Image (cartoon, rainbow, N blue to C red):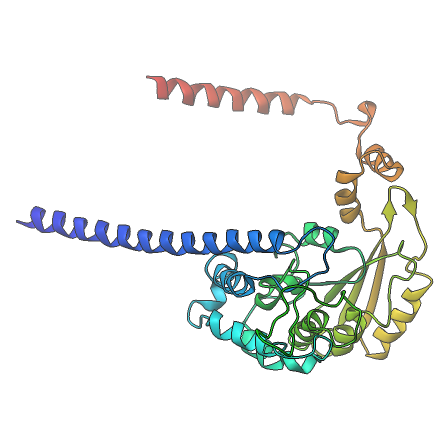
Length: 343
């Protein structure tokens, strides 16, 4: 009788596991479908040569990524307090729908940014950037494994890579044909969104902060940049004692216009120290050069790094008798184990 009861309990447990697995697979299948639809929408909504416009499937993209982020990308913060993605979408579009596309100030997104906030481990791991360095930032931060960027939080993830969106005063409230070019007016819906979530993020992060800048771009630090106006300005010495600048330069061809010791970096240092924060700056950190050299293996600086990291044959430590004895013992152990398995 006990064996039959145990068998029955085992069958029930198996059915429960299968049911849970089925529900999980169904959820992931739905998310995958929505993400595929979002990719299709982004790539097909614009014709060649047309101006950026609101994706026709913006809601499906938004809600699909919102669910994916909570289920797959970063589920831990949402186990007990999941976000209602449809509600977040309504707050998002309310900021710009049925409005002039150049009349969407940063404050219009306040309700959304507040509702989209979620706990996240960012202490000493935040990486900002400014200028044309995002591809390297993306590779280096490694999807939150090394550092966290604004695009790694929920509000950044659901909108990343969508080039533009805007409203119009007439029905249907969104312009699916054409939006003003990015940056063509001050209060444009897309730039003000990134400014709004950048401000919200900067007000909440703690610990040492990092920023990657490009010393080959002419002016690495610009007072008109989102970093200067909506990130740096909201950092606080009590929460953020240090700002570390990672200053990279183009290596193919090599082009150095500014270094940590001149140009706009001097102004950045002054602003940071005025906030009673400690300032550090490193020209071409070795770890970033390794990433750059993956794409430009023939660059002179990469040849130098390879030579510097190699060890000449006459400098290598010779095998000693202790090394040889250790190798023989390990080999014998391996052979003995293999023979026992055969027997």
